[in-house]
Image (cartoon, rainbow, N blue to C red):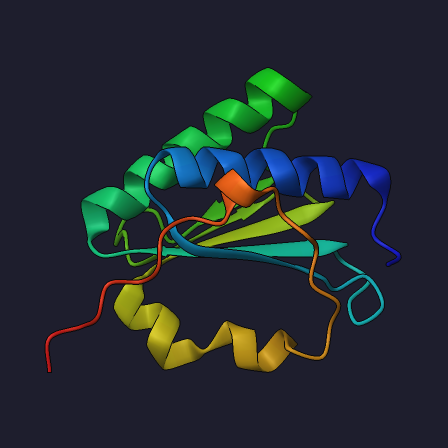
Length: 131
């Protein structure tokens, strides 16, 4: 793994915060060898827009409190369907479960090493969508 210790620390804080707000299927990838703009991605989802916003707020709060980190960019907040928090060292993607299924970021980054998350920071399984 080539992600910096700082990036791994931020990943773990972000994953814990997302899990505390019931984020689903939280996963992190070391993308440092593929991208020059960041070391890691954190992906998680939620079943509704309100939950997406709650996760985003908690991730921001906990990264600021525990790591002194503030996002350099925040996108997608208005719609609450896919919010991207860019911390330079890491990028956090919080997606509505429909967007997560449609865009399939896990498929895009599956060749990158996964960053191990503590047991309590992996979130719940995604809720199945009504068919």
